[in-house]
Image 1 (spheres, rainbow, N blue to C red):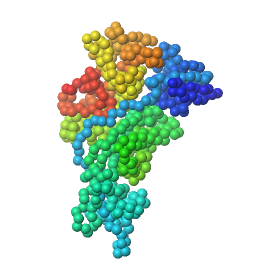
Image 2 (cartoon, one colour; image 1 turned 90 degrees about the vertical axis):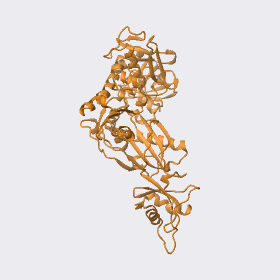
Image 3 (tube, rainbow, N blue to C red; image 1 turned 180 degrees about the vertical axis):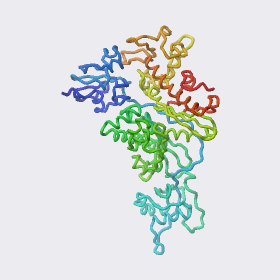
Image 4 (cartoon, rainbow, N blue to C red; image 1 turned 30 degrees about the vertical axis):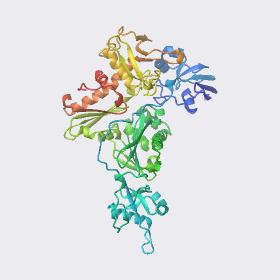
Length: 575
């Protein structure tokens, strides 16, 4: 039997069978409800409110996640609620998958440029009856003779357009070379001139890799994170970042953490294909936005680099992931890859390549390799701890003799708002900063976008736990101490600290810090501290010998360092 379900205030309605959950119906109707656990019923995020009609009886999981008061008010988890009649469901703003703040700016270092793709300004000799050489042969000969480039072939799409283009451009062009192959031939800017044909006296103009032409090739760089995607459009002449954009990873609808996604890939017949397509769509959404922002044709993007943890790497490339979910957690491949854009599914020049950085191990991936490469000048020749905080935290210890040891820690879910009662991603309205004034105990906070509080994100929950400990509300063990603050209450036999009281007039459930939330932060921060201590102990390096402590990652950029030290997440090194 099917019933009509009306989702408000969104204004979308449609049929929902009695064996179809409200979450499934919402997704079918195009409503992006947050479901951090991928529909396993353990995250407590897909909250809706039954306003009219009847739904199935609340499960034990819902009683545990929501509590008696919320259930009595009509709140349900959409994944576990099934319609028993025509039904009107209210969707709180906190349950919608809204855009997340994505960190795309950070530290930039000056490096010696050595792009894999280079463009050469060139003049190709006109064919004649005396020398009727093929157009491609003439182009390759010019590159070898004038620029001493060991180039041997042209990509097929180049050959398909080369002859008419050379004639339209009066035999002057930019030849874009990668390795031993010409992967594109582009027109010159009006102000540019090409080098001479072989045998002419005029000095050749240097390759355009030393100066940007109006139609010069560009590069794309992506960090495919489990939560977000960061993308950059890069000038291959100067190395400058022309534009930067971020977006949420569309794979989130299949699970917040990488384990949930890999399980989905195994269990669902189309799971792996859906996850691969979602990753491609996310990358191409960012690439299109970058090109639109700068007004360039995506076909000018002739080189790309993609990094991500090992699971993201495998899901993007359609590689098997089952072996990553059990010991000894072996990746399908650890080496770097150079693949045509079409093989990866990137919206760029079809002859362009994507360089995929190497993985180190099952849970230390190419994103950590990229972080080490980017910060090399900071750790080279020094004893350094470098960590990249995310859903997984990868930590490396570098030693003055050049050795590097790495470890991965399962820390991220709590720092992304996952497994936290009122946790949310770093989206508008999320509490991101918390202070408890020592003098009077007044709680102050900031929200993203200065909007009304709609949950608490990772940096906010970390601040809250640290501030509650400093204020004496939390014992050293992490236990909420009774009678220490007027905002501390007991609900259903569980203590919780009220950051934001509920507001029924605005359908706001309030924001609290529960004892369970504190335990989740303790587990997350302890995994990071354990990883640091493990690396130091393995190499018999005392803490006072650490010269640098490098924190990377989008979440890492928002951490309040003193608060992180206060709760034991980072070692007590001098600020």
